[in-house]
Image (cartoon, rainbow, N blue to C red; front, side):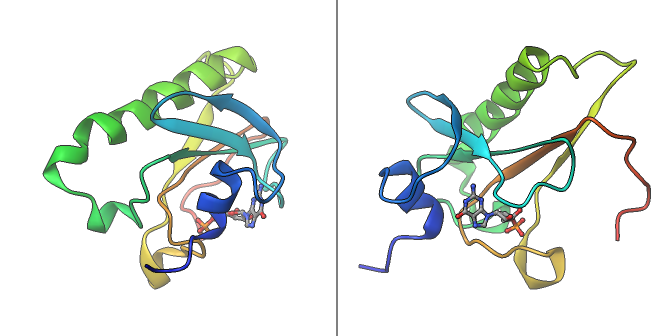
Length: 117
Ligand code: 5GP
């Protein structure tokens, strides 16, 4: 068995995190190093390493992560078009991924720049 990832250890409550949502398929918690006033990570409980390694039968789980992102954005008051937010999924080394457990970054509370670095 491979070592559990950092995020699997957060799911198992072996590592503390500021968890703001949990359901059967996902968990969401505040990023430890926020890049915006709101920076939340939404992750599947299933240990999918990254989008590039998801299976065709993971579509419900992947879609669920976006629905939870939308719910959280509404809850914290940044879902309107007058405010807004950004969702980011880093995939692999060139994509900037540092934790090999799929996660959606929900960033908001400031004006985002484009293109991303
Ligand atoms: P990635 O670079 O893989 O797209 O994003 C990983 C994210 O996990 C980073 O934004 C980083 O700040 C966050 N992170 C790393 N370690 C921890 C931790 O122990 N707790 C929490 N809450 N976030 C973490």
